[in-house]
Image 1 (cartoon, rainbow, N blue to C red):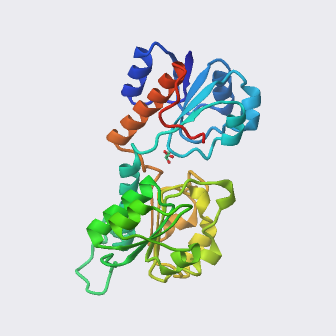
Image 2 (image 1 turned 45 degrees about the vertical axis):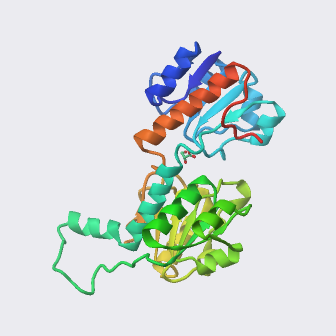
Image 3 (image 1 turned 90 degrees about the vertical axis):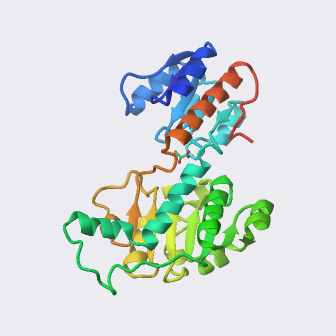
Length: 320
Ligand code: DGY
């Protein structure tokens, strides 16, 4: 079985695949063009796909009927047409769990960075404006006892809720497709409607899987219903928020601030005015960027392909 790995991954994944006797192809250079990617897909049997810039949709599956399985190097699978893959019996592996702690760490980091105005203060230091101690300047807000609203309470949302409960004794409310007994029992989390979530959250953090029908769900009408002290955190997918509406809400002080590890579009343009705001902290989609999480992802992606090569079910599969 010939495996096309779209970008170099931690060695553990490569070793596992080699030891399992799979033939591996990794392109010499990174940042493949669409044409290069497609031509490599055509000359291999399975793909270990890194990142979400390549779309596995109906056109792709029509053009590459040779592809038998795809192991994503991500937990998110919004770049894959799962229904189309199902119809063709193509398993789509993903990498849940191994990155939940790392990604929720970034949500937690952004929440605190925005609450304590870290980006603004760092800019001041870098530009030589440390300034004198000032009782009225650069004041953040404390998170103790505040309400954290989680949109999408899966593994990552749960980890974010747990950390926030332990660190700041925050009250946890959540909106999700299903009730989470674990979160309700362990963290005292309360299930609320979407309307209640946006109206009651002091921090609103998105942790759901992105679906096309949720495109820009967080827009002007939502930001207008949020609290004035609210912090909006998105570490899931940039497509969840309308960035212009977010900019307006931030400049008009409809909400306190925003912490983004994902942007819309992504990557963000360096001219995007949101980057100039002092109540915003933006990171370049580094949720899973720890040695531990990235190694775990490499291992899991390799294990998915090895299971497939043995005609076994992938251990973690996005197909229902
Ligand atoms: C994921 O695993 O889905 C991360 O967002 C990286 O793409």
